[in-house]
Length: 467
Image 1 (spheres, rainbow, N blue to C red):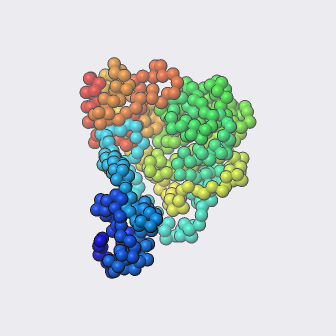
Image 2: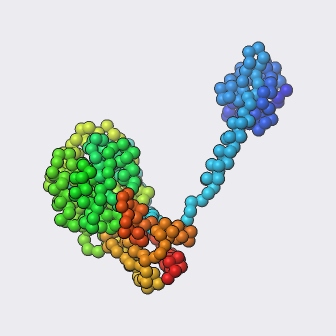
Image 3: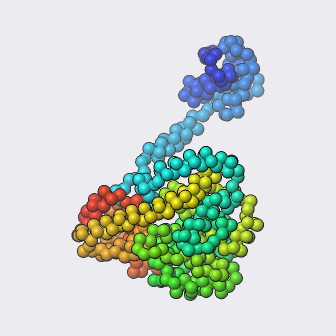
């Protein structure tokens, strides 16, 4: 007869203890498949507990499939050997995956992460304490779908001071990442419209649109940005662009093309331009390029930006500025959505911007990135890489282009460098269409590069390129 010892000090009820003991014996094989279990009455008598306690334990084991009953024959152990084998195999594979450490690179020129040393932790902590002390009422009230008023006011003030944009807080929609905001835009503008994305460009944007099952086309570019004839040819209604610093080419759209684009949008009802201004704050030479939205007089531009570049890639707070008529429509049609950014984060960021810390942080980071870029370019120039490499588009943002004269294919060079701990991508990878003539141009995003790693990276690239 089975015997178990119960604990009188255990907060778990007796039937729960009995269930746990028996389950453990079944899983470990102490109780074998199809083994007959004691009757409820005899089992209770042997254990010195009530019959109802045994009955409850058996009922739980039957419900979970560890025990089965046969009429007038009693209770038996379920054969779970195959299930246990599958579970252990899956558990083993999962453990292997969990134990596999993420690959570390000496330099990752594809990463947009920022160095932790540059995040204003002390100021952020001070503002968090202030919010917890002074904004308790606001923290406990559900935010409007567009975000809390203080943050939208702070963003409007920043856009006026930094980008020359005259916008009202009511035009600003705050969300947890631009991907979420794209989804809102599709609902606002319509799923039947054709959306255009730049070619070359950031493929994730195309994937997001396609995942929402809307018509989407790649739009060809030239040296000034998206080509207007391509927009017309592909019947695009809404075009997604990054005119102040195109990724990956680094192109800055000239004012002539900007007015052409605004003219295209004004030429037909329902056409819009989504201006992705993802790293405009980090133009390293001269003043920031005026936004397309700031010269739009016909309410055709939807402006989007994020704090992931200026603060950290893990700060998932983005915003969009809608033309006034779309902001009104958003408020009427989509105000049932909950804001996806917590009140706490919004209040802290509102203070960070409103109290002048954001402007100081941007100025400090611009100097930091300027010095880092200059040091990297200097080391490339003073190395043997200068014999086979040239630099372009180094002033607009946090990446530049490295043109390499090599017999290696782009794929061979990327794979060889990755084996050496250097991750890099080529411009050709970002083309959906014709890649002819785009070989041997590489994107050098240096935001996460450590200064102490620069020399090692240069020496490694010299070896791979055999110069």
